Image (cartoon, rainbow, N blue to C red; front, side, top):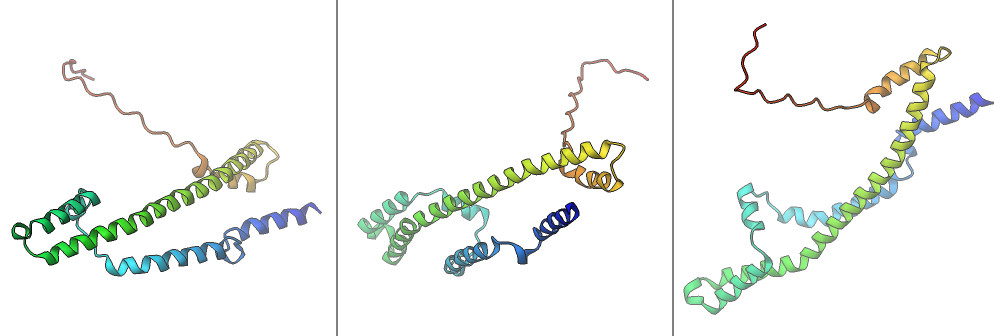
Length: 179
């Protein structure tokens, strides 16, 4: 009877990696497709910018663009072509309209990250407990070699990752030690 239970647990653990049996996959796929549909309109209009162009674009605020547009409208003799002023006004309207979308997308990203991290944290606590129990069992004399092999497989996942201590800086005033 316990072997049936063990086989069922093993089967469900194997099914976890199978995308066909994943109950969250349909919902996630639908949400991904909706986000992609929203992004399609922006990808067609956007061209990649160089790092210098990005710095220049991010260095000015919407208020700065509005002030420049007003100044150009008030001083057409000095500032030149009014067509560029229209483009500047259009840009400020675009930025004011879509800045809220950008903020909401960032909030969505943060919320999705928090949900994913929470799920991973809860699963990692359980997984670490399972690893500790199997590791303690594998040390015993009655443990099968399969348990010991599983511990060796999981060791890189849960093994301690210690950073090497930085070497102390060499003192240039210290006398050289001969070996």
